[in-house]
Image (cartoon, rainbow, N blue to C red; front, side, top):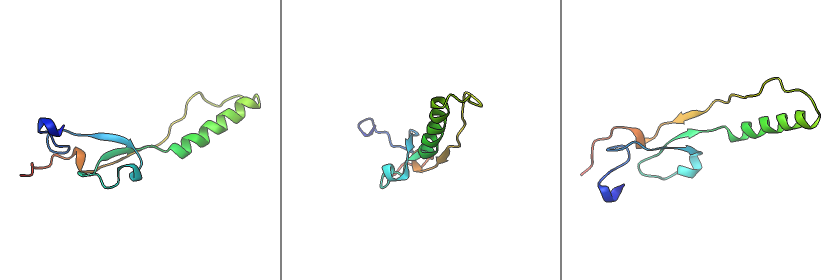
Amino acid sequence: MADRGLRAGTNIAVISHGSRMAFNGMIPSLTYLRIPYFEMGKEACRILDRKIKGLPLEKNYSFMDAEIVEGESTLNQPERR
């Protein structure tokens, strides 16, 4: 991006997924989607356990809440000179 004169949060919006630790110290701060990986694993284990035991599943899907953590990489920042 830099070689084309583009800056995250100024000319282009950038978003990712992961955890705060993965993006700590980035400039500008990165907007990311916090995904509940631990809860997803627990749900997968619960489903697998029911399958192994031959028990029926209540449903064929699961919904998990994710959170957008807004950083400076998606804001319309004035260009720095």
